[in-house]
Length: 527
Image (cartoon, rainbow, N blue to C red; front, side, top):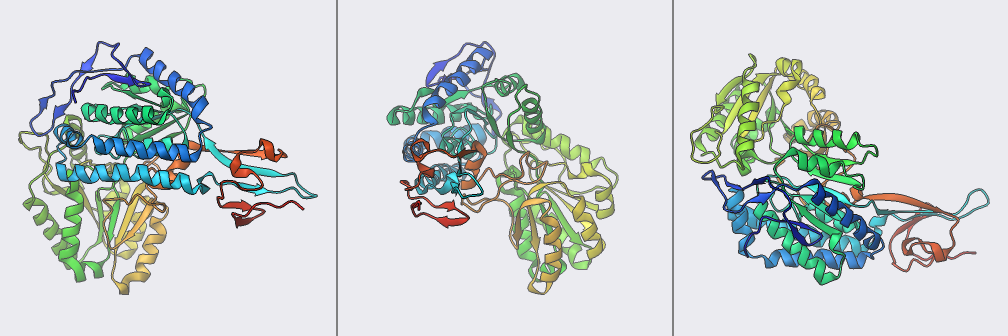
């Protein structure tokens, strides 16, 4: 289907502005043919205002109706067929194999949220019935209101227009205004058309979804500052995420920002693991560092090791494997510039040595060499800037003199999404000590694996202490991501006729609730 370059505000195409931009093929640096428009303040206001009107209706939609909508969105996305895949490949250079898998993840998480809604206990109904000493109090979660979602560059499906933030907000019953990423605007438009078809098919108010395009900071800032917006979901760089967070906090009415930002995802390799599995660990590490050209938020950008002859051989093996792999394509010019700058700032440090890479290539497309850096623990501890993220195929070894040096270094780490340890069975005592420290630094701890790749399941925690996220108590992946866009409301001494179904005595939804401190799905029988 032809790409228009329009915004879609409550399902209606719009192009009021005059500033335009195009996508760029990252393999050839060739601009696309379609001009996309930067959203104007008027268009942003219409999108948020339409979401407010839609919320007046959808705030009372049943979980089953929301579930049917999510499933229809998944079906409409699949109906886009190869056109969506080919368009995304042209705009991102990620390849059809990767994108096919990402499409399945995107539709799968929409359907997983639908299943969550039908099960029903996500509302966290808690009931304390009246006694002689207390009133009757009943509490559950409700949708927070219109949500702005900022799409990510590196996941044009799974963290974009119909991605996890949008899916979890929809599941909560919240209207969504998506600020599309300028790196893949045509891909975003196709996803918006699929969502709009689902809205029509399911009889939802048109303002339940809007798509805004733009490649300027002003578009995003204007959206965040809209007084009727209630929350923001974001995946991207620390710089952009912090700017969004600060803008939201400076509003007369501050709103929550659920931003996933920078993470270097430390990997700790204990000596016994290196000795026993040197080849396998080196291969796994290099594969993880270069996966998707290193453009994963879970890319292992830091490797902590204890100095000994085997460790030196291991580093040489990693260096060789990194050099032997052809560098992949970066997503866009901004990422290429940012990576060149970040690595240059790190390598200017006198204590950092370049083992391989760290020199910009002359490739036809956006590219950067697979790079290995090295420093020592005492220098790493002394300079927090050595923890700055290198968003690309780059990793840095930190050489610790001994286990004590390692244990002194871990507490200086910044917040991360993940932290990993490789250890043999005989090293589990040391691993326990390391995990005990890493628990304060990351949202997901991994043993004898690598951090790239996340499972979209109930137990997944994709979040961590700042600067990994602005909200470490939440996750942006998995079913509990819905809680970001819900808020608790307690009802005191209300009769059954005025209570939501989830809190009524006879439990018509048959959901699990906490009733007088006990898990139960049985009706409440008043004596």
